[in-house]
Length: 179
Image (cartoon, rainbow, N blue to C red; front, side, top):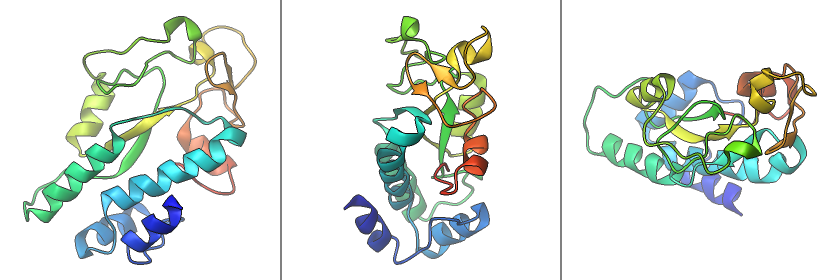
């Protein structure tokens, strides 16, 4: 199982419930790698998303981004951004240059893969973040009066608030599975 492999790879570092500071400490002392962290969250998404419908798409490049962060850290270089190697989810209306769709939850925009990042995505990357995927927003990000938390592309999410906000999901889900 991927979760067991991720736990072994990070030498029993307790990822679940770890604070940002603990993750950074784990990176610096070698008890955690970005690759193990990304694998952990990919496994959680695979297990819990069929129920929660919180993640609309997983980044096929997330593990490569994590491996790059690990290699950079292992090279001994210093001065990394504050999010170096930390996985994040972006709302599906934020353009990313990865092989991810940017659809605002609508099937009408499926296939909309852009060549450059939106400003917020570019700033997150500059800080070192690994783009794990896209969260499931209410279709058109609640621009139209639709059922709160529903999108044609991602289905009904258990997230309240209508935005597919990963932080909201963390607070509403007892299993806090979003980084």
